[in-house]
Length: 236
Image (cartoon, rainbow, N blue to C red; front, side, top):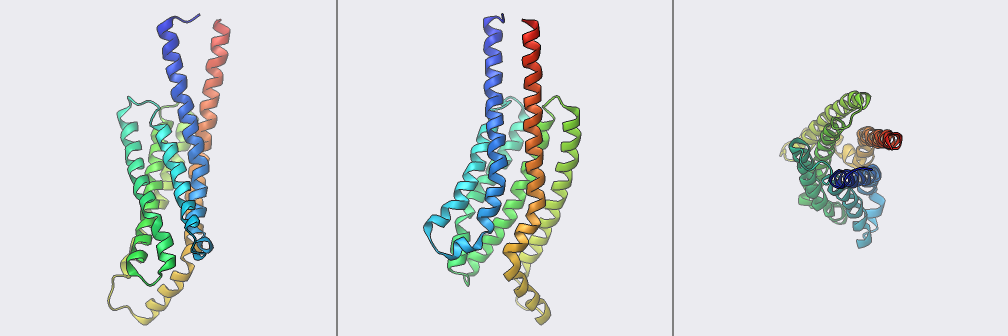
């Protein structure tokens, strides 16, 4: 039987792993919910305050998941700093979500429109940093295949998100121009009507790839736990 201090250490590790798995589950379900809640314009068109709670609840689920991840390997400085950046961006994104409601209620107010553009940029930066944190987490799990896959897919995801952020900032900067050629102005008007659909189509791949890596992390952690459980039974 394990000694007292050793048993306490094992229990502390298991509690941190439980928080980790709980946080990964919250991220897995929260990511698609945030995408759907923030892109579903028909909900905002109804003008009900209950609609405002949908993106808040979805983003709150992500923040809960990040809070659970914070309780895993708290002594790792690089891991904690990566999570701190993601948490800060998540709080900023959470605070910007009401502007979706205000923008649909007052579409001709430029301040609300620029706030929604900032929400879009912050969301991509949020997902970009989340992929970096996932990469750091994968390097703390003893699974070489998982590390290689995470390195490949999170790297690809971050490059795609950087490209999309560049496009978003370019589109945003167009709104500050005082003189726009007529063809470009007509094109921007078409893009304005297609933004909700375009956001969903552009973000589906990064979100789905992030969800895939979160799921693979959970599977790898369960596999490591099974190996340790089997080993402890053999030693007993």
